[in-house]
Length: 341
Ligand SMILES: *Cc1c(COP(=O)(O)O)cnc(C)c1O
Image 1 (cartoon, rainbow, N blue to C red):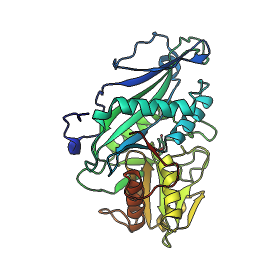
Image 2: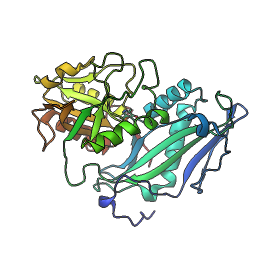
Image 3: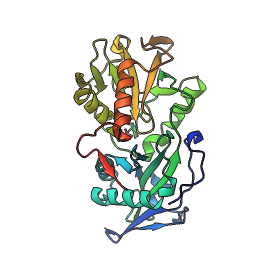
């Protein structure tokens, strides 16, 4: 198999059409077998549920080439479980997690030529998603759906080196207390775009969203969970039922405990105590962990001792250990790595 002629090290984070995508349709109460197809366009009716009432959800994960030349994915069973949860909350039919993992494997295999080589820093981003394709005009769940998996190569996240982020505490809310914050629904992103464009216009990299009920507790950003390090090296992550359960964050907490021997804690984190932390990072599939240097709370600056040029020492170790596990340089806990080829 010959790799595509791409300048892997200079890839950005943008969609590039690849050769094959997986498609399965839900009709008459069941999913069909699904197939890999070449057509990158979708034809649906004008009254499809996704177009009228935004019934859709998605996942995000990556395939990597390891040091010894295998193509692997990272904990795809957890993405499958999370998509099942998203479907249930949105009254969509569940795409079973075993079939989800199988669809991921098939799609990556069919696009092997697009999987970036080891050492390039680039990876193959995998986007599974589901939407209501059946027509609805009255407000109710549709009765036909489509599940798809597309892949696209993406470049190294920290191109030109790490740069700690500056966040602002947002006046907008991301997720209602008993709403949909804990699932990966497109609608959560649609309504966060205004907050994110506003933050960028004001010179910030990201928003820190608080709990809407009291505005005293830290939740997450638009697309990544928080991790904090205390001055005595404890790793803390906020606990809330409206935070999206990041697989990267859950893995980093396990790495902190099992590989680095650090104490870990999932608990309520108050805005009040931000000034007392030594390090702060954002966790998600895209960057694994991005350091945060500064948080601005309505003009008041909270600067972390880790500073604005480097990752803090604990976040650096967490980053290096988890990427080492993903790239096959460090032995993984059982079940974390799914070898595709
Ligand atoms: C996808 C997502 C994350 C990160 O989850 P990972 O599984 O680590 O990629 C965090 N927050 C939100 C809101 C997300 O949608």
